Image (cartoon, rainbow, N blue to C red; front, side, top):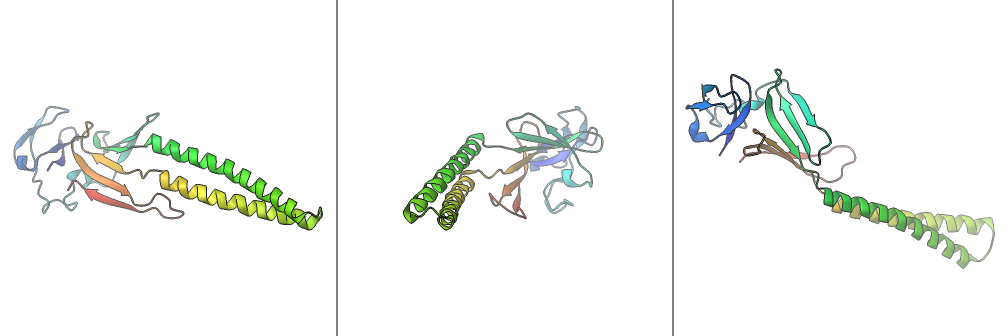
Length: 195
């Protein structure tokens, strides 16, 4: 199972297989040769995830205008440590926005029909019948809108986050699962290591 280590020369993070622990390695970025540290889970100070997290400070470099959210976490010297990817799932996102727009239109139509139907059923052209028709139309629109929002949330995808030690996404370090699609106050996530 690949684990991530850092080149002591340039600070580049990359993945190695556990059987290479203690052997000489060549950094793919700066080509310097160094001895691989002990990669056993028992000896790691971060609970076995990777030595990349053995630091207090990270810098974020975000790739803008990209279809998929991509970040690079850098060390204090600007060397890349972790490559982060959060797929956007554009087809599902567009479908959920489409459902929301249809819901708004349907709510307006339902509210109007319910209001006019109620006004016609009451028959009297006084202020009380106007208020009742307005309230019925409002509640009909609200019910349709709530149903539309529920369907929108059901369609909208969860956007899990993947963290890799290399730019080619060969060695997964962590996966952050989005536990809920919708949260009002607090979002919950589950963090899993490469195992």
